[in-house]
Structures are given as structure tokens and as C-alpha cells.
Amino acid sequence: MFARALFFLNSLSPSVLRASLVGLALVIGYFDYLAGTDTTFSAIYLFPIAAAAWLLGRPTAFGLAILSSILWVTGDVEAGARYTSLVIPLWNVAARLAIFLFAAQLIGAMRKLHDDLEARAAERATKLTAEIAARERLERELLHVSEREQRRVAHDIHDSLCQHLTGTAFASQIVAENLRSENSPQADNAAKVVELIEEGISLSRNLAKGLSSVETANTGLMEALEDFTSNTSELFKLSCRFECPLPFLIHDPETANHLYRITQEAVGNAIKHGQARNIVVQLEHSKAGKLLRISDDGSGIPSSHMNGSGMGFRIMSYRAELIGAKLNIRSRGISGTVVTCLLPLESEASS
Image (cartoon, rainbow, N blue to C red; front, top):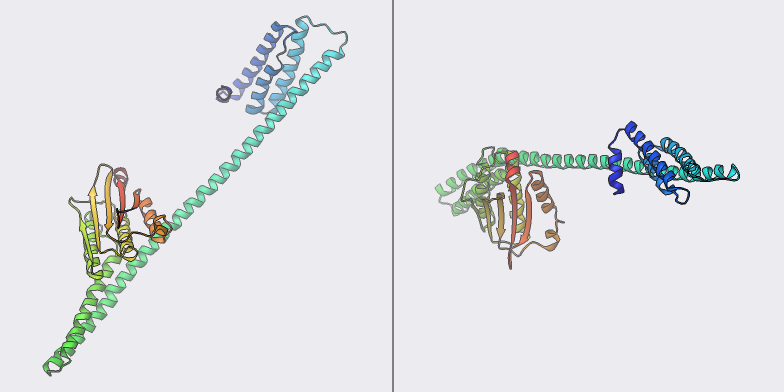
């Protein structure tokens, strides 16, 4: 009730509030006069004084304190109080005024302390907001730097290493053909070397493709995940398949790239930590939005990683946060892990 009254008074302009508090003090003085000398309204006078000290400042509160003291003594005199000496009413006025002034001073000091605390809290909140924004900018920049470095390495692998291996394979092929024309017993070994080099070229190209960003086309994520799961199966000699029963279109290239990197990290964790032999990457639609799911049959993720202490999981969580998605990591029954990343419809629409 008191808080509501203060809120209402605070909504008034200073001039209207000042006039209202003076009028309230006069009304209290009038009822004090009607109550006679047997009842004191000293505590009631404190309300306009306290409101003035809190909302208008101590000068206005001091003025109301003086007015209230005069009203109190005047009301008693008009109500029939008789004093044998002038000292008595003056003493009463001084004592009551001292109480009122002390209350005004105390409440004014409390308001100043309150304002100082609010100012300090606002200043700290501003600094904290700036620090959070700076940290987010740094994290974004680190991700962008990482993406640029991955693209650079991918180009180097494709343009330099693959070209070098291709030249080596061509030279080895010539050597193998010469040995075969000479009926050398080393001809088969030379052909095997050529085969291994060609496999190295294929693996290098797949590695370069995995390091590159997702193509900007709407279907780029589907095509990238199809290639990624196929290359993972070939490279690690396990079953890694991609399932997407309906077209899964992502219009924002950055969103598609983050989903692709989340998939890479989740599959890498399944192989490295879970020793999984069967991994399924799924893209599907739900009422809540677009869902990416990576499930495996491994031994599960260690508890130290499940609680988010692993760097990979923190990066996945941050990538999901950047695109407004919800990342969830849980155990899959007796064995295995399921990683889901739900992109709400409103987040995808705003991308």
C-alpha cells in the first residue's frame, strides 16, 4: 500500500507533488485540530514529510517539517490548550520540529544512498554489458579466423599437395610401366605405390573439401553432409551414413556452415571418444523447427565431456547459440550418444 502511494506520488510533476503534500499537511492539521488535545497526530505528519524527503529532496521536507510543527501547536491552541508560560509551547514546537527534521534528514540520506547504489549498479551493468559484447565479438572473430585458416589450409592442400601428389603418381606410373616392360619383379610393387599415391590424392581432396565452407546454395548443407559422411566412412573404415527424407533448405550460408561444423565435431567425438562403428547424421523437420541429429553406437561420451568441460562441446554450444539453436547432448540407451541441434522456425526465418 505504501509502495503504491509512493509510485503514484512519483508519477506527479514536482510542482503538483509539492502542492499536494502541502495540502495533505494542512488536512492533517485540520483533523488534528478536530481531534482536540487528547489525541496527537505527530506520526501522521511524518508521511508528507517523508514523501517530500524521498521524492523532492530535503529542503522541501524541512519546509514541511516547519509547517507541520506550526500546525500541530496552532491546532492545540485553537482546540483550547492553555499554557501557563510561553516557554512550554515553544519547547513543544522545538521538540516536534527536531523530530520532523531528523526524520527528513534520515530519509533524505537513505534516498541519496539508494540513488548512489542504483548509479553504481547501472554503471557496473553498463561495464558488464560492454565486456560481454566485447567477449562475444572476440569469440566471433576467433571463429571467423578459424574458418579463414581452414579455408586457407584447404586451398593449400588442393592446390599444392594434391598437385604434388598427382605429379608423383604420374612419375611413379611411368616407373611402373618401365619395370613392367622390362619384366621386372618390382613392377607389381611399383603399381602398388601408384595405387597408394592415388588413394592419398583422394584422401587429400576429401580433407580439403571437409575443411572448406558449405556451399552457398540452399541445398549446400545436404550435399556437404552427404559428402562428409561418405568420406568419413571411407577414411575410418566404419559406417557413417546421412539421412534426409525431405528437402532441408537453409537460406543463410553462415547458419548452414555452423550446422556443418557442429556435425563434424559431433562425429569426431563419436569416433575419438566413443569408438563408434555406426554413426547416423539426420536432418529432419519438426513442429518446433529444423532438427539436426547425430547418433552413434559407441561407448558414450566421458562424463568430463558431457558436463560441457570439453573444448569441442563448448564450441558446439557457442555455434548453436550464434544461430539461435538449442544444442542437446545425451546418452543413447545402454551405449552411444545422441547430439541434437534444434533450429527454431523463427530463428531460421530471421537468418
